[in-house]
Image (cartoon, rainbow, N blue to C red; front, top):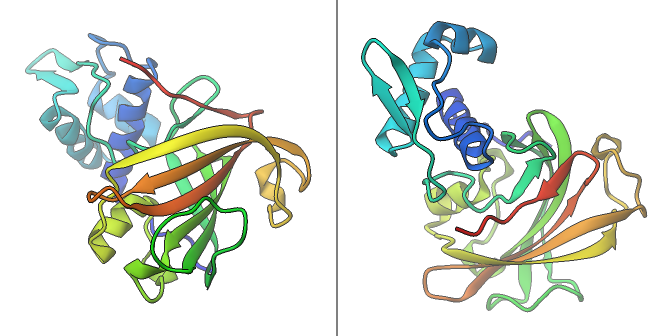
Length: 233
């Protein structure tokens, strides 16, 4: 099974910085390190870093002062590829990446919340990492009415971005419910918790722009390394 396609490096870096700003790891008014030092620390070229900083500047999250440096302008409602992703490392932030485990088209199982119009769904299982640390197991069910099949080769690390680009489906809102569950039997060893172990789980119901439910997902969170965060402003 191929790994989910990664976002361009400069987008990854901009998303990492957005999540650090929203988590309070980069506070309003903070001056970022010199660009060459920052690029070296991140293991990227200065050109790639500047493209990432340009994105933040365009969103009003960064002020670039000639001859002085780059200064954080914190805001909680910044546009982000991962705007709906609510899991962070225990000390905040963390860049989400995804390893695709399987993609199947199946009849919807008992136990799923009711959603969509079809009796079939596309089941996507992934292992999510934050800054490379395994943190979340995902089982996502997209209603079968949106496409006949999911092309595993075309999937993006941001599923909502893939939905928009490949299916013309915009997810506009989501409802999360947290409970205590157990790690599923398909969990890979890398997740860090054995199948059957107690585990926090978020059940998400996602909606399209017409208000109809399009997707349901189960998200098992390894709370030894990460936590669910919802900020109210």
